[in-house]
Image (tube, rainbow, N blue to C red; front, top):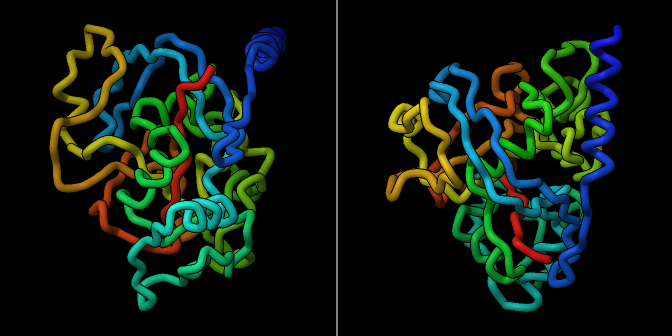
Length: 264
């Protein structure tokens, strides 16, 4: 009990040091992730071996980019992602009118579509390391909310008989928020990361040295996606360390993104 109280006190102190800003270009709410080391990976699957990574400080989206935000981008730029109606149901029409719920995450966009938005917003897609550090929080947790999975109590939007595989509001599931204050880094939608994917990439890192600001492989065929989605129910997909991938042109109702910015 005493150890638990100490950890809670430490977490509260670190939370109070957190800073929040708003990107005036697209109104994204961003939380600050301080510079420092964290352990990346948990030695399962291809997130093996776990290794120490140092990241400079950065701001990351508290939420995924919403339909309303992406609609604003379309209206401002005329950019409209190529969408395959047979494979997904677009939530925004070509005029930038929001068809789906404006506060659900934008989906049916490929990696280039996410990157184009990020550039317009004066931001970037998160590197795989930046995404994972934010999800794991100051304590380096296996899930954003802790190290255990509760099969009866949903702390993320996963497949069950109630959600019909649908996305939820970007600020839903407050009990699943990470220690840094990010929402839905487990569940709801997969999220595009900046990195090329390589199943052997962690093995190429020297686990005895601290890797600084890794950018991923120099080239590849697939891009990293993280976080799981509402289509899954197996706990492994929702680990903060779990790595997955898709062709950059992959567009489905289950893939979105959030931003990383270097502001202030």
